[in-house]
Amino acid sequence: MKFKYTVIIMLAATLMFSQCSDEAFNDKYADPSKVATASIDKMMTGVLMAGHEFVKNSYWRFFGYDSQNIGPVCQTWGSVTGPRIYEGGFSPYTDEAWIKCQKTLVQFKVLEKLYNELDEAKKEAFKPYYYGAKVFTYQCVLQTLDAFGDIPFSEVGQLSITGKVVYPKRDDDKALYEMIIDDLGVIGSEFASGNLKISAESDFINDGDMGKWTKYANSIRLRAAVRVSSQGDLKAKGETVIKEILGGTGKPVVRGTDDMIKLIRRGEGEFNWDRFDGINDGLDYGGWRNLRAASKAMIDRLQGDPRLELIYDAVHGGPKKGQRVGVDTHDSPAVTEALMAGTGVDNNICQYSNLNEATFVDNKNTEGFIVTPSEIAFYRAEAIVRTLVSGDAKAEFVKGVKESVKLYAKMNTNSTASDATLARSPKVDMSAWTDAAIEAFASGKWDSNSNKLEVIYEQIWLHFSIINSIQSWNTIRRTGYPALHYPTTTSLTCPNVPHRFIVPAAEWSVNPNIDREETPTAYYQKLFWAK
Image 1 (cartoon, one colour):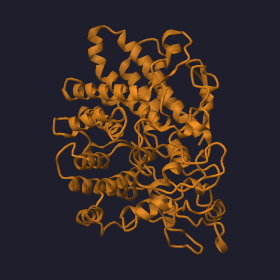
Image 2 (cartoon, one colour):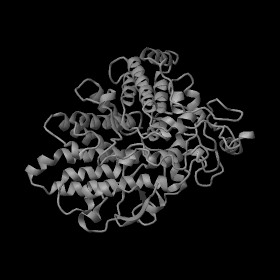
Image 3 (tube, helix red, strand yellow):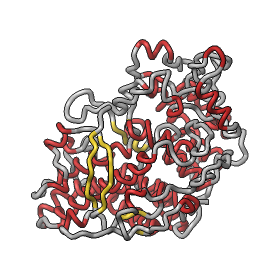
């Protein structure tokens, strides 16, 4: 994959980022920070484009951020247990998470400025596009808050907006969570009123479906409320919002396959990107094994689970041939390095399971999931167990597992993998896994564990695992489940599993209003909502 390296001036801070070329798109949907006249509908599309690789599992996410940075700290990916396991394999991938959010924010802030300058009649006409861009931007902001804690927000984009050089301070993450939760409540109600319309031409997420936009806003609000509801200063607020959304008060959220919020490969037109375009560059069976290896924590918890074969291939050769094996964090770096490289006569064959190639690596039809029905079902099950709302927690849990199995099964079934890939990684025969069989499996999970919250949290972690690892990490930090083993390393920077990532040096080295004491100890500053 070819990258275009550009230096952007953002808030008078120079940040490096890499971005896949989208010239055809940019010709029509101008960068909001570079336009002089307001075309809010097209500018909304530009905002969506600025952050779409961040909110869906793109090449950058799959190949770098999730596998090298997030995966090792929540063990949804297997990584060699070396000194730098918690530092990330390639720091620019972590930096780019910060940068992609800031870039999206800059574009939204320019849109917001131009929107606010419209007369009242035009404001009313363009309100749905302004709101759509805001919902999307808030999702980018929330995912960045989840990773870094405090981030710049209120002062972002002033150079593009006012022409003045402003070095943005970091806003308090608590205040941002509260503001976003409140604002999404207003937007969700406005979307639900039936008075707002978004054209399909400008909307490559929901194709102008206002029912989906309503559920998108409410579901992201629910996700944020759940995050802060377990402990911390916003616990009461989080619980109140959960009751409001899930308590039968007419706040629709994603519930099934048809209303899932996702990005799909369209096959033609301007939005014809492949979600994993280029992902198999360097991911042939002989290379980059550590970017697609299984973790033992995942393998162990997927025993007997229909998703096991959908997510992981068996080892292809050597003494572990035919087994599904994940990196054990109890093993030494020497052991994990040897098994990753291959052993014995098959020393070119990794002795860990890799991600199913048909499902993930060579599949142009793998969708970019933003909000899935499983997530909402598990949140509802949790809320019922916590007595925040009434209902059948077991039924919601079973629904969450079933929807998750179907999601992974659909990716595998619809794979566009080549014959060569399918020879190594055949599509999985799911004929035995009828709805009744999946429901029986999920019911057994529920009935066999007396700690209902623990079994729910484990399933949230498993469901998000490969498709959105940051949410798996959030679950661990918020609840303490699943309980995983993290080795202490010899790293001088980050010897133990971090609670958050630190601000990229590319930001604080040029921004005098970013704390210069963002030292390695900051890795261990718990976020206000964390256990």
